[in-house]
Image: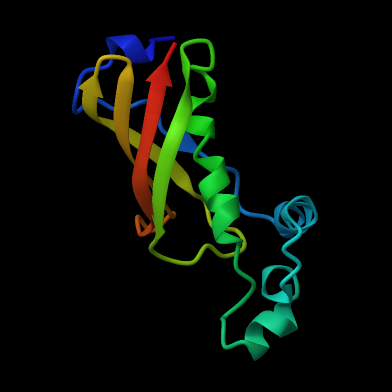
Length: 133
């Protein structure tokens, strides 16, 4: 495994492809987060809200971004992040998480991050500030 200390500006960490989004993922996230909005778990409620089907919580997608840095927990931690939601995530979508080193200052590494669906559409983008120990 390479380390983040070896990463050069413009290089990326290994992409992570999530399993297809399942209804159970969203039910579990509802319980963990306390967000029981039915558009995330009940088909008819999502359709009544004008959606083509249930959608994943935006924070579910954002929370999964941490997986990009999990392998490097011995090197440092995610100190800060800012995210912009760009599109909806639906049941059975396959999300790929990406991070590219944008800037390095001493022990602070700034990454651009994004999540894209199986069609290559960006559903989330932002920045992560990773601080090495």
